[in-house]
Image 1 (cartoon, one colour):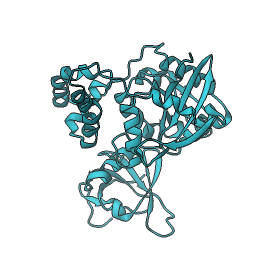
Image 2 (cartoon, each protein chain N blue to C red; image 1 turned 90 degrees about the vertical axis):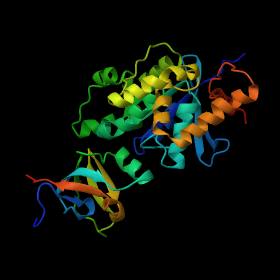
Image 3 (cartoon, rainbow over the protein chains, first blue to last red; image 1 turned 180 degrees about the vertical axis):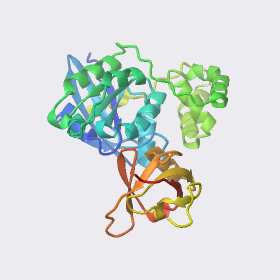
Image 4 (spheres, rainbow over the protein chains, first blue to last red; image 1 turned 45 degrees about the vertical axis):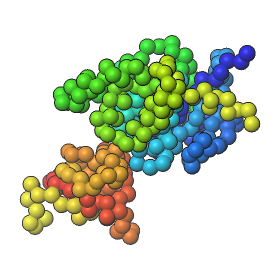
Length: 251
Length: 86
């Protein structure tokens, strides 16, 4: 029986060379399609690395997970609710401060993140130097310097994806502190959210509840609570169905 | 600039070409506010109005290492405090 491919989400700001990273990782093995029920089309591709199979889903380029548009909603929903085995966030090494906004939002939603610090060749041209080791320890997730259009860094990127998706390394994503009142509120509601930690990151969920983010609350109601009510039992919460993406190959 | 002291704010769309301001307040709400915050138009950020805008609207602004085009309707909702340029 074939092992199910690991599902990898590919996110990042617009204009970070994300498409180049996607094309470099998947070669010609890619096609586009609609995510069921949505109007946004997503490109999906696959590759094999050291004996394991991977499916990459190319999410729309966004500046944020706090949905302003259908594109951002798709990206947010996939990363937060579909629980991919790893999420790669592509960032522009010449614009790291700006791109950190999305990176920090993503690591709040999921710990299984690899930062692909792309356009390192552009950074070198502009005399920008980045201590990627320090950045990685600050963020608590792997940071891989790449120049995808030169083909640089891709092997290390595949290795990092494999480690994170395979659960081989322990990740401790940096936790942003929001100030006393908010932190106290988070601690107050966190215990009741641990029951859902297989489906949703508890701290992220706590923050969205405090935000009263209606779109997120609707998703939570649909995906978590309604199925439970329908089953008439507190069943073991189901992991998001990212694995259904892996099987998309058979067409 | 006559009439503008250090404490007063002007809308970003009135920032002269080549001048830099510090973001003080966003008058926008909803999605536009969210988008501006995500781009980095937060309190304390320095934003520079760039020169050479052929049609005047939208204009280009430099902020936190990146360049953005904002329509004057959007830039009008960002209040900045002018600072002396060296």
